[in-house]
Length: 472
Image 1 (tube, one colour):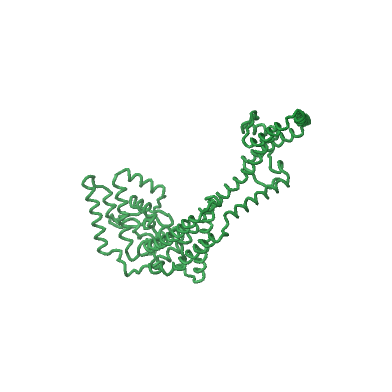
Image 2: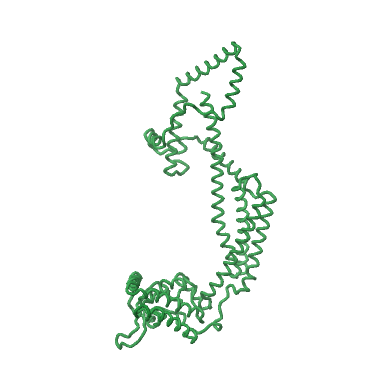
């Protein structure tokens, strides 16, 4: 049982290494080859002694110096033929079909020596990329001070822009305000007049003027569905500022209503008994797949059906968003209805979220700008003592540490005061982004550095082997 795990490619490499090891051992134990080598060495020495006796000592010394000077640049005239990888692997599979692990190739001492060598290279990387000198430490202090100061000032600055505040319903218009209805009617008229001149009348005109199906609440109690009375907008996906573009438009096209539970019911606009106008949610459930199939059919039936439905949805958003109830926080009601309901009851709506997202975005940008300033300024102090990649690792470590300290400070401040509005989410987002990008960059540079050091070490050994081979 090996202490390491291997991929298929690594097993293949192990097979080739084992094959080469076996061949090398066979050569080293070949007695005939050993005798030939010793005989050749003896002949060389005898020839040198004879030449010295003949007065050629200076010529021999001169030739030896020339050989030594050329050893780094010499190339073999007769190199061995190198087999392709597939042939070697096939030969290795025939020679030893079982799975080869490192323990089959190396002894415990050799494995430990390899790990020691790896640890030395890691220590070398840490030494070259560590933040130990005065310049790096100064930048770390400055970057940390700027990021922490920014997170401490965030609650006071953001509060001046209303961060986390709910809206005052008294500052909003009623949902049936005359000005909203007049603006709504005028927009519908303009859309109708613009296209009615070129296209025939059709159901698309009805979609503009009739009540959207997700605004109908009658019949919901009979189905055991709580639509929250005036707060019904939170329980229908047609009112969701994000999902509504899909489900609200589909509801308008098919006269269905989709709840935040994704249950879907047909809507009736006429009483089947009296044939009088009576809008009501029926017990007829419509699978979402069927609703979207009906949407497709409606789009094919008249090229204006889809544009009219999208326009009606957009206009409904516009008429609802500035009213006393507003529009709910997007997506939340489908995943956490209780929390969404709490926010909606406290008059925290989509506009409040949009305002807070702008503040969070501004905070993120400021944190990123500080990072950019530190990166550019630290780059001015670069010297040739290390490569640019290793120096950039030091820069990114400075950013990681400073951002982590700043993020920790805002989290601790929030926990102590129990005031969520003091949490600098922009700073946290910047830190998380750095954790993903910078750590990945550092690991990539570290891997390249280790591979480079190992390659250099192997190249030295290969050069030495080539030299010995040429000498023979």
